[in-house]
Image 1 (cartoon, rainbow, N blue to C red):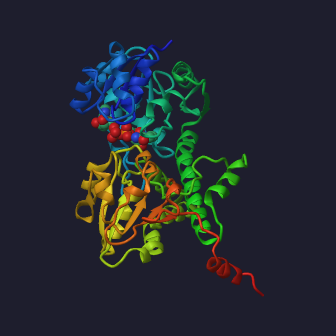
Image 2 (cartoon, rainbow, N blue to C red):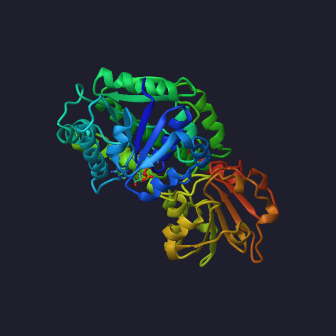
Image 3 (tube, rainbow, N blue to C red):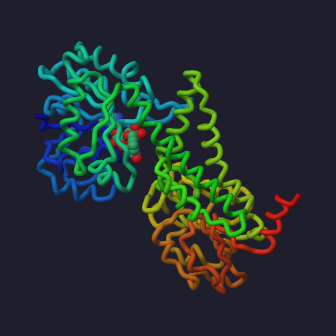
Length: 454
Ligand SMILES: NC(=O)c1ccc[n+]([C@@H]2O[C@H](COP(=O)([O-])OP(=O)(O)OC[C@H]3O[C@@H](n4cnc5c(N)ncnc54)[C@H](O)[C@@H]3O)[C@@H](O)[C@H]2O)c1
C-alpha cells in the first residue's frame, strides 16, 4: 500500500494537494524550485493564498515536509505528482518548458532508485503531450522502461481557486489516464484513500484523459456563453427574465442548471486558455473547431458590446464605478478578468473609471495602471459617480442598499450583470437596471409586435 507521496510544484494547486494528501494520512514531501515555497511548507505556513490551506498545513505539520531536491523526494516516496506551470505559448498550446525540467530531474532520480515508483502528471496538458513530450525524457534520463521499471499516469484535477481543498477531497470523479494497468491500480488506490465522497474513477488511455480534461473546461465555457447570450435576449424581450429561462433549461437533465446563470463572461487562469488550446489542437489535427473560436471571441467582445449597450447612460466625461475586478467573487485573481476588460474599454472610450474589489484591489491596480483609479473603500467607489456596473456577484455588493449610492449631481444608474440587487428596483435615489431582465412596457412590446405583423 502506498503511504508516501511526493508533490513536485507547490503552487496554487500543488500546495493544496500536498496538504490534502497529508490530511488523509499520507506522508508528504513537497518539492519546488522556489526556496520560499519550501521554507513556508517546512515552517507550517501556506506558500500561496488559498481557502483553508494554512490551517490544513499546520494541522498536519508532522506529515508534511519540503525540499529543493527532487532526488530526495523521489527516494522518500512511492508516487510523485507533478504540478508545475504549463503556461500558454504563442500558438495557444501549453508549453512543456517547466514540465520538461521537472521530468528531467525526476528521471535522474529514478535512475538512482531501485524500487518501483509511479510518476503522475497533474498539470494540464494537451493530447499527446505526456506520451510524446514527457515520457521519453523520463526513460532517457532514468535509463529505465515505463510500464516495466516505473509507472506513469496523467491525472488532472478539476478544482476552482478558492475551493481547491474542498474540490480536491470531494471531486465529481477522478480522471485517470494510465500508461498501463499497474500504474493505474497504484494511483486508484491513492484516490480511494483521498476521496471524502467515494468519487468514482474513470480510467482510460493517456490521450483520452488529456482530451477529456480540456474538454470539460471548454464545454463549461460554452454553457456560460450561452447563458450570457440568453441574458442579452431577455434584455430585449418584453417581460424577459433570464433566470426564469435558465431555471427551465436547467430542469432538462441533458443540460443541468450549473454554470447557466447569465452574468458577465468567463475569465481566470484556466477557462479562456483551455478553450484556445483545444482550438489549437483542432487546427493542428484538421478538426473543425470554429465554434470554440466563436465562443472565445464572443466572450472577449462582451465588455465592448456592453459598453455599446449602456453607453447612453454615461454622460460625456462621466464617471463610472466598476465593482468586481477579480474574475469571480471571493478571489484575488485578475487574470483575464471581465471586470478588468470593462475598465479598460471604458477608459479607452474616454470615461473616468473607479474600480473596486474586496480582495483583488492590489492586482487590479497593477493590471489597470492609469486606466482606472482602484479604491479600497466601497463608499469611495460609489461617491458621485454617474453609472455603477456590478460585475461579480460578491457578497459585499449583495449587501448594498439604496442609501449607499450618493450623487450630488444626478441619479446614478446601477447596472447589475448578476441581478443581485433587485431590492434597489424603484428606489428614488437611483435607476436600477438588471441585465437579463426587461420590464413589460408599451414601447418595447410595440417594437416586438412589429416583428410579427403581416
Ligand atoms: N490553479 C488552478 O486553478 C488550476 C486548476 C486546474 C489545473 N491547473 C493546472 O495545474 C498546473 C499548475 O498550476 P498552478 O496554478 O498550481 O501553478 P502555480 O504557478 O501557482 O504553481 C506552480 C509551482 O511549480 C513550481 N515549479 C516550477 N517548476 C518546477 C520544477 N521543475 N520543480 C518543482 N517545482 C516547480 C513553481 O515554483 C510554482 O511554485 C498548471 O498546469 C495548471 O494549468 C491549475
